[in-house]
Image 1 (cartoon, rainbow, N blue to C red):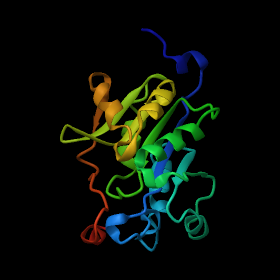
Image 2: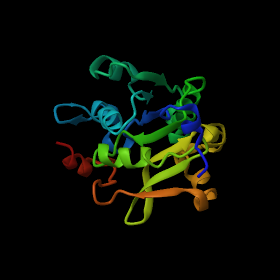
Image 3: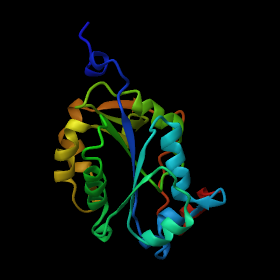
Length: 206
């Protein structure tokens, strides 16, 4: 059986978390999503904890709307905080900023998650992390067979993913073009991929 690169190096792959938390909550009356309250604390703290418990020792957090307030109110020790001054241009700009912050980190892959999906917990993250095989890995959580978040990008794909990220589409175009090689990891039994987008969705937060 062919050895993987990690087996040859004799060490575990380094998979980092990349949390996109820059959204301004336009449909929430301009309430930054990172600061929405969940279990008595800012939602961004919950999202970081999920990534860590899922196997990402290091988490890069992309901030945008009310970045200063997030830094003041949220406890994010050990995280790499990345400011995206172009956050209003959409998720694509945050994904680019986050991937650029990983340059030189030595990581083998990044698991990208969204701050406004509290129904996706550590078990789903761990399953996606477990799909890593090489630095050109491409994997995503699936819900009843439909691709969703989190998504794992091997380091060899970061430059292409960042170059393709535009507007609110994020990596959607890239993933669509590479659909045939994505490893789908079913997570529908352990997670719910809903978004907190509108005032009605706030009822899902505890």
